[in-house]
Structures are given as structure tokens and as C-alpha cells.
Amino acid sequence: DTGVSQNPRHKITKRGQNVTFRCDPISEHNRLYWYRQTLGQGPEFLTYFQNEAQLEKSRLLSDRFSAERPKGSFSTLEIQRTEQGDSAMYLCASSGTETTNEKLFFGSGTQLSVL
Amino acid sequence: AQKITQTQPGMFVQEKEAVTLDCTYDTSDPSYGLFWYKQPSSGEMIFLIYQGSYDQQNATEGRYSLNFQKARKSANLVISASQLGDSAMYFCAMRGRSNYQLIWGAGTKLIIKP
Image (cartoon, rainbow over all chains, first blue to last red; front, side, top):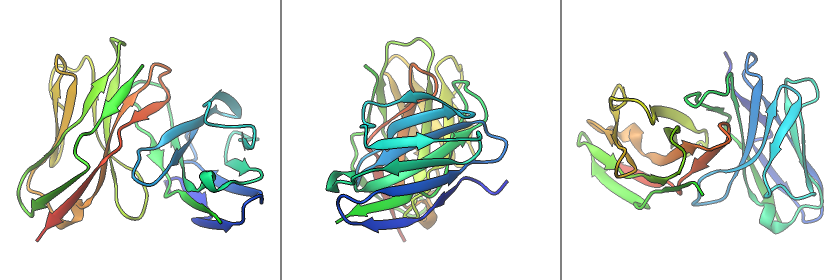
């Protein structure tokens, strides 16, 4: 069990550019989540996958954001035409079940800075 | 709407002392789960402890315990015998109605003084 892996750890981009982040969940976990965390705040839910199916998207996820999990393993989160307000830590998490008591395992996040 | 409130933005505690981090929640669901996570400066969220709404006893995990007062809708985290390595952000979270989305508080920054 190598844990949840996220790449890159840091990304600096100019406003208007597209960026893509990758998340590799724990191998036996079929549930994958993306959260966004801004400085001084708790994480905010963005989207959720069960296997390759994207079952829920937050209203926070504008049409500039897209997430995929093509084979039910790793996931990518793409932000098009980045804005300064997109600067945040993007956290990925995975879990094995959907029960109320199932804890999420988080990666170390990708810190995005939009200049 | 479901909500988590952490009223302590920051706390300083002397090493080896016990510390209580406050968390209150609001939900109309009869079934819910409450979590505490630790986030050190490295950024990774680390699970600490879980309490289910129907659990009769307060949860404990090593030096961590959860003071669950259902009628007051509070789920305070107690850390006994604090250590320097406990310095971090601490977040309280609740499993949402959808059963897969966590609702998070704003966190408490805990600093342990030697």
C-alpha cells in the first residue's frame, strides 16, 4: 500500500493557461474524490468517481474544470483558461466503500498558483 | 443544510498537556459520521478518529479521543499528553447526506510549545 499519489506537487502557471493534475489512488480503492482547499479553509468537495463513473459534481466545478477516470484507476483533473481564483491546493482522496464510517485516504495535494 | 463549525482558529498548548479542539455540527439526518483529520505542513490529510451518530461510546484511538455530545451536536477532539509533532491544522468533518461527500470545518491551528 503506497498511499494516494498526486502529481505534480506544485504547479505555477499564467492566467489563461490550461493545467492538468494526476491522482493515483490506493490500488484496491474504487472510489475517488477531488477536493479543493484554499488558504485558511477546510477542503471543498469538487467531484466523486465510483470506478470510471463520475457520480457527482459540485456546483463549484465550473465548465472550465473537467475530471476523468478513464479506466477506473488513476484520475486527472484539468482546468482550462486558468484564473487567479483557481489558486488553491487540489486534494485527491480514495476509499474502498461508501459506508458512513469509511475514512478517506488523501494524497499530499497539488498546489496551484495562477499568476 | 449541513455545517461544521470550528470556533478556535488557533491554539497554543504546552507540551505534555492535554488539549481539546472544539467542533459543533448541524444536520437533520439521523445517521451521520464525524471525522477528525490532521494536516501537517506537508499538506497531507491524516485520518485521526471517527464517531458514528449511533455509537453509544465515545471513540478512542491511542492518544486521541472524541467527546461526542449528541444533544449538543458537538464532537470535540481531545489529545492527551501532547507532543511537539502534534503541531498541525486539525479539521473536523461530517459525512454528508449523499454519504460520500465530507463537509469540513475551517480548522484549528494547534501549536505545541516545548
